[in-house]
Length: 233
Image (cartoon, rainbow, N blue to C red):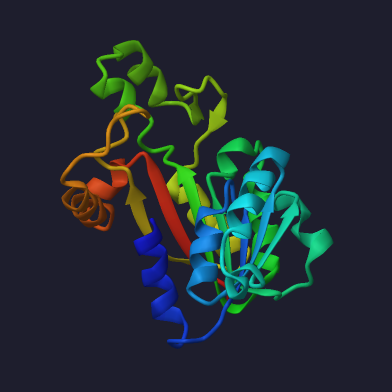
């Protein structure tokens, strides 16, 4: 996904330009810190106090030049209108967040509002068009059958999550003047891999396969996750 994001940033902004980035639901700050290391000014928002604390510890170990480019704050996608003026950011990330939100449209609209004209909105969502894949590959036939007509998703964590269908999110992005510019699949072949599985020796080959599948039909359409990139008009 990082490679996909870098591809979209490189295609939209001049090389060397320092971008204003907002990472909503940043978790432990992996993407936020990666982009700060590339020279961008990054604001990370996270509602979980424990994750913010972990992110602060990680940032504190970075050189001063990187630390001063990172701002961390508590909040979520529903708070953007409170904290930021319209057009405050060139890039807004919202990864693994909408699956926890019952009504995604207002959140996405708020994210688009803080994007500058021409800005990039990056969403990572659970693929509602392929929910039957995981139970089907596991031989859970009742689960697969039920998944065809549902956007509810319960992973191994036991949390009740929500998935998004590509057509619905495309319509949402059109409606908020940040139409879909590109989309990718994420975890096409590896979604059934155990969370505690060892890193394979041929990791780079695995990543090359996933990257190729994530941009190629029909494979990307059955990926576990969708990475959607909208551009603010």
